[in-house]
Length: 203
Image (tube, rainbow, N blue to C red; front, side):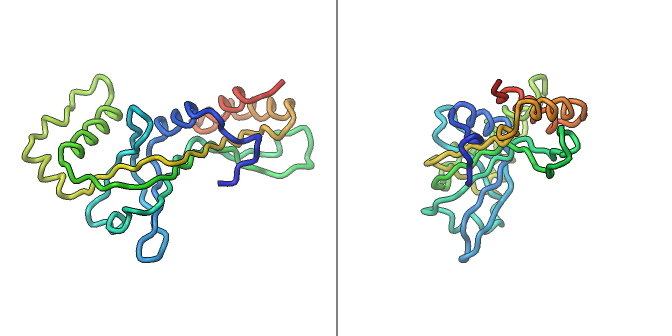
C-alpha cells in the first residue's frame, strides 16, 4: 500500500484497534492464476498473531489458498471532503479514509473443535451483551452438520500496514474547517473521520 509519511499509522495498537472495530474485511488471494477476493469477518486472536475466519465450502478460493501470501484489507471509516469547506476555491475534492492491510499465510482448520471455538468467538463479539442467544442452544448435532458447509482457516500475520489519510497534509485552519463541517453530517463515517482528524491535528 502506498503510504505517505504523514498518513502512516506507526502504533501497532492503533492498527489492532481498527482490525477489531472494523472486522468485516476483504481477503485477497490467487486462484487459477487470477486474483480473487471474499468479504468476511476476520477475528484477531488475543495474542495478535492470527486472524480467524471461514469460507462457505462451495467458494473455490480456499482450495488453493495454503502456501500463498494473502492480503486482508480492513476498511475503516471513509468519506468525501468537499473543497467548498475550505478557505479558498482553488482546491479540488478528496477522500479521507482509514485502512489496515494485513499480509500473511493461511492454514486450513482441520480440527472441528478449533473451528467451533472460532464460531463461539464470533458470536461473543457480535451478539449484544444482553442477548439471550448462545451458540450451544443450536445443539451439537446441528452445529456439526452446519460446520460441514464451511471451511475454517487461520491466517498467520506476517506484516501489517496502517494508513489514516485525514487531511494531515493541509493547514491546521483548513483541518478545523473540515472537522466542523463533518461534525454537522449525521452519518457514522463522517463523525468517525472528524474524530480521527481531531486526534491528528498538529498545532
